[in-house]
Length: 179
Length: 180
Image (cartoon, rainbow over all chains, first blue to last red; front, top):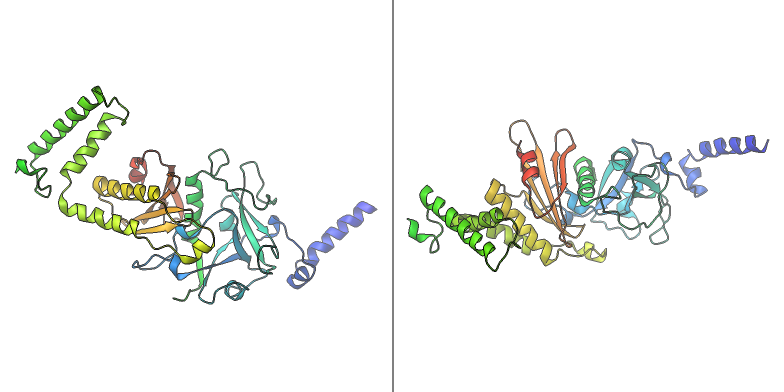
């Protein structure tokens, strides 16, 4: 009886938190499996991160760094939110990539990290976290894990560069930055 | 024509002179390796290759290398990266970047499309190949701790064709994949 109640509660909870306003109201923390592949992740960038004197001025892998890349999750955020957020810059632009692209063949977990204590209040705040080869992309790895950059962790420098370059090549510009 | 090697390297050298310089460089290096230098400088072939590159390199091409160097040593670093705690490229990364540009230019005639500081703390260099129906990029990053990585990327099919953690700045396989 108790088991059935728990199961029913689980189903109810999942349905309730599909409604963004309720999820936000109850400050529900989603798990990596809740991110849909086609959902977007937004991130700010600045004009001085673009190469100069090269047309078209496209972002390169050089602007992106690991670990723990912070993004806004499109389920709870719009592109302009990354500019208007507290501590954001009106000169910043906004770029996006999809959850599927961010996961990069299961090497990255997309983790909901609402209202991080170190930053401004932001319910949509999410992080891209590196996974060890033994870890599941749908389970949350520890926050603030040290940088993974060795062959044995599956993240040698070339793998890190591959990933950063891939994101730079597939990203979409949502809002152009100002000079 | 042959007497000007050291005085004016811009003079075009005949095949015969090239051959002689090659042979004498090799002989000199072999002599150094046999005597007090021992063989600590790496394979003899590589050492005399470097000597020949330096002796036979025409002056007008030095200006191109100088251009790369100027760019690398005077790179602008985004101000907000400093606030985020990102370190600027150090002298090791800059020297390596110059060596990489020089090597890829002298050996493979490759000119970088962009040279940038990287947020991973070092220097980012990329090259484009738009030959025939392809659109490939050769991307290199050399870091403050002297590590170097290379990726060859297919921009049309959006996939990585080749990647490597580079040892001793040997880009032969990467360039082969890039130029194929």
